[in-house]
Length: 268
Image 1 (cartoon, rainbow, N blue to C red):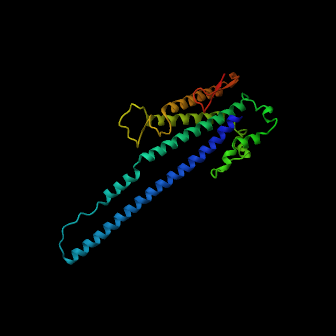
Image 2: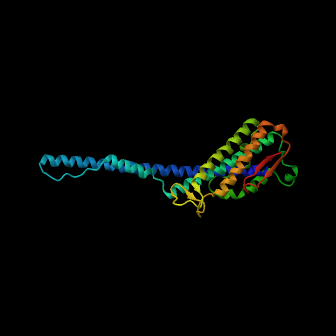
Image 3: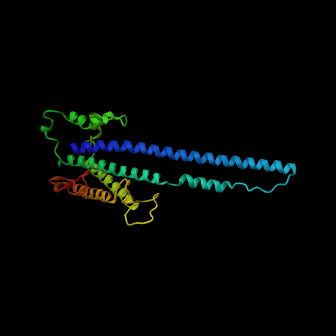
């Protein structure tokens, strides 16, 4: 119960952070596009002014050395290349954004996996002893009380959790499929990360396209990425087992061997 609550709230925080980062990136791209448009308009005006001046000179019959006019197509192509160029800082931001997506997929998939296990009757409700001197709402509020001090995002209430984690109207088969999709998507994103986070032995790494694993400021290291892959693969296999033969599963065990933050829910 507490594990599902923690992953559910973390999914919300990661989603909020991704939305903010996405908005910042969109504003940056729009600013670049505006700068490009202004630059092209300025070059257009220069070309028009140059043409007018040339006509005036020709009317006066003055001979002057031919001045090379700016090639607007070349200017436009150069400006577009500059706008599309990815800096080392841009690449680092995108790498961090991708890492956040990995964690969100894992949280979301685990919440749905736990919900599917509950629907299958393989996970019991929390024992009444944990609420003997308190309530689920009080536990929730105390657990996430520190987030109430932050201006953004707005903290979630216990009522939000009850509504957001209610999968009673969702069929178990759909929950299993949704959880499996999350883990598969996560694995796909990690595979792309492993293509750009290269080994320490690689030389001449272009920091606008890749990062070495020994980079001090890297968002994720290869070792952690591969550990997260193990979590995705293991949970995907157990979800397949749950979908094919739920009657043969009698026990669920939590396993944090692969990664200390994300568990594997082993079905026995």
